[in-house]
Image (cartoon, rainbow, N blue to C red):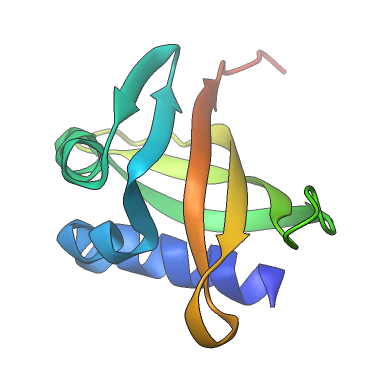
Length: 120
């Protein structure tokens, strides 16, 4: 379930970022590179402004039941492709998911951190 969520999020991010709004609530919070954005509409606007695509997800970790209501803490690591660039960069993101209707989840908190390129 967790890997499927991460893949769905990545695919939607790349194809139709506006559709990500259904995963957030007005109380949801996104922290992108230290900037805090609250509310579904503001979060989608921020995500729509980002000049990259999410490419490969290479690891998804989950801490089952991060709270008594059955929430999940999900960490995703992967690779992005900046627009107009030939190189790729790594990213990490953490989702705090809360149960919603019929086995689905809503994003309560979400952080994204772009990882610096390292010389080989």
